[in-house]
Image (cartoon, rainbow, N blue to C red; front, side, top):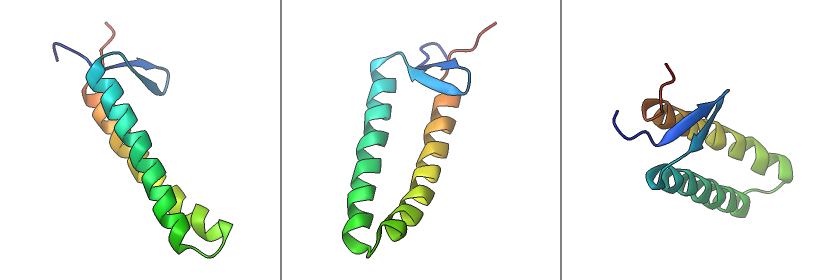
Length: 75
């Protein structure tokens, strides 16, 4: 890839371009939206967290996969 969006530092992917930052902010905004949606329908804190953690896990996998495919390779 000619223009990498992320730089890998250990197990983390740090955005280095505007597209990387946009993807990062969209993921954060979606996580907040999902949390508020789950919290409005749940009856307890544990119910909220149990449902949110699974969604956060899936979102993290998608973000990591996209970041891995658009990362800067170190040679």
